[in-house]
Each structure stands twice: as C-alpha cells, then as structure tokens.
Image (cartoon, rainbow, N blue to C red; front, side, top):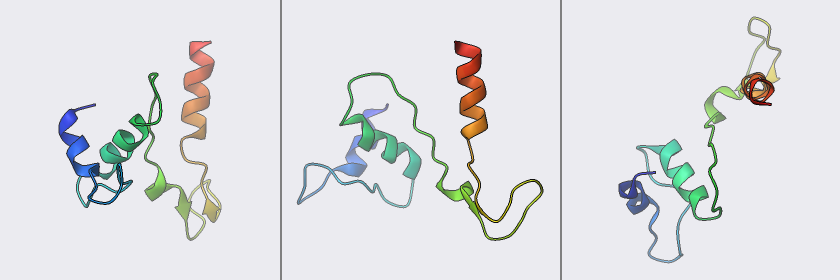
Length: 79
C-alpha cells in the first residue's frame, strides 16, 4: 500500500479516521484496515454493487451477494 494514502486517514482528534475523503475511497479504506492486521489481506470495495432496488437479470431485489461467487471460485482453485 502506498504511504501517500496514509495521509488521507490522518486525524486531528483520533489516531486515524476511517474516511479518507472524496477521492480514493476504496484505497483509503484498505489503508485503514492495514492498521489492524499484520498479514497479507484483500479488500473488496463492494458497497456500490451490493444492493439493487429492483429485480435485475438473475438477481432479485435487495442484497446481491456481490463477490461471493468470485471469492468462492478463487478459493476452490487455490485449495
């Protein structure tokens, strides 16, 4: 993770803040998580695609479960 993105989560009142601003949101979210772990990880920014307001193709209305099949297939192929 690039150190420059750490500047976006600096806070005047806390150790770090969990919102980095309007730009690079998913990167600053990952940078925030980096403070709490000491091993390799992946951050999937799925908030924008995780919910639909009407039925769409094979997806029903509501939560989509976006990324679940992707992660499942990835793990099946790694094991």
